[in-house]
Amino acid sequence: MLAAYLAERLSARLFVPLALALALAASAGDVSLGVLTVDAGFALMLLAQFRSWDDLADRGRDAVSHPDRVIVQAASVAPIVAFSGALAILDICVAIERDGSGIAVAVLTLLIFTLGAWYVLRTGRTAAGDHLLLAKYPAMVVVIAGERVVSAPVFILGSALALYFAVFAYEVWHDPASPLSIGGHR
Image: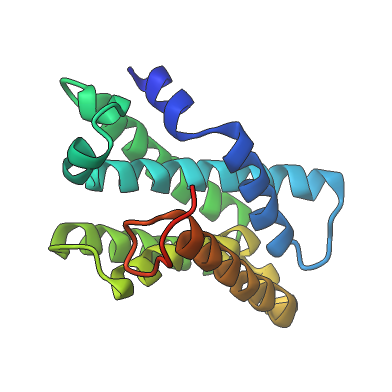
């Protein structure tokens, strides 16, 4: 079930370019192959963690709008919950190992708690909620960059902001169910 879920919801066609965009935004201009590869790998782990969280939180709504999805049809979501939890722990460990400044861990912890609280407390889809969910992408840039934010704040925060506007534009164009949508064009 987990393999079918990953194949369905973590398309390399979408997530590899997104991971590369996150890595480039966090690069502080250092686009060496080694740094980019490690950062993109970390970005993929973060993307997988938060995609699975989104899918778990949206399972009830997806039962109506996307009844054919693996997570909706599954008798148990325990494998996806375990996968997501393991990724959260692994991502925190990677953030600790990569960034001695504590910036990555602090931002990742804040992101985890903020999105977790949002998923528990939300009663419906709102424009503010969609903005909050989109804010995870620039937050991921800061997590990936870690202490590089201190040495290149304009580059990294500017890149994170540009990425936010890009994912916002994608959401507006792509998701007709979003309160931010202009009609959806899948």
